Length: 491
Image (cartoon, rainbow, N blue to C red):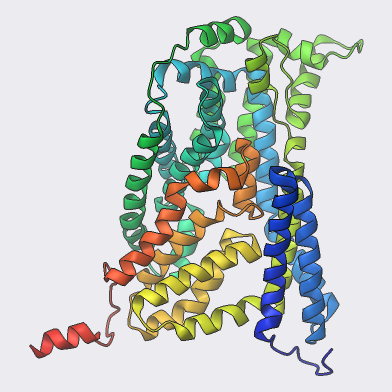
């Protein structure tokens, strides 16, 4: 350990060790436990990696108290995401109890077709997410309905989840109502609408590529929903009235209520609705032989669905499997993952790991294409290391800002690259708060849907390609002319 009062900068090997440890341990966890790694082994891997980072930082003069405070502060930034996860768990529970979830499946089976289901899912999620600016809200509402429809059509759940995420993240990336788009614009110091306009160019092309791929993945053939629709009708009596909780959530989101408020109110709305539309179902679910009044049994059943989720006992195996889900308790493993990931991210940021790894990358980037590619790589690395998309927007954006300015590029070139890479790639990392949320909400492991999440990896790749091709590499006012511009002027 150094005896200096000031912490000493990390060596390159020292900075690599905590990151390499995490990657190695998570890979080993996936090899040994598969998708079950998110239920505990990954959390252990993150905790051990954080302790390795603490030891290295301590040897370089960082106080243990300061490292602990950094970890606590980092976990504090994830409190909002944790409460949204709890709200989504509650919403899934009451939507399953009320029949809202099964109504989405019932009408979806009659309106959609396996031939174009995936591509339709992308478009629906893209439009709604662009309207409300929240990928999490779309995935937690429309997404769970689409997963149910896909299950009844015997479609691949991993491809369905990827289609939902691709559409939702297109809207999140390009909507002026999106918090991540606003943050990316702020990171580049540009006008929000200028940022959205430039980001939409690469995002729209990435969406078009995704639509082509999902169209090709569609399953040809006839589909008869008659038997399944009849079973749903006999068990839940679906009607358009059951869409009221969905209307409540989308309406509150459009009115710019915070996601937690919109989602949890939607959960409560479903509970109130089922108390009037299907009180016997609520009483049967909550009745455990207690001699209590009817109104308290109704309250107990709804309360139980909010806390622990709904368990269906219709006798139809497919329906019971689809509807038995939800509750705040169902999100606890994911919250555990987010807490350990953010603690790890706080320690490595405090130790200077990211600064040590990113600075040489900036210095080595000589061309415009290399500079943007370096930025995208830094954003991806930050998403991996800190497990938080907001840090992945702000930190690389701040570190690369002067480099883009020195090269004469307009600030929107920086914000566009950050927006096209930080938000989409966050959903591809299992321990990132976004990846953990998507996996928990849709019931599909991150590594399972990752190969099909076309928009999420096409968007950053197109940002890099545009830079190497010189497309929309706008120059700032008073910027020095490029070599090509000098040659053009001389001729």
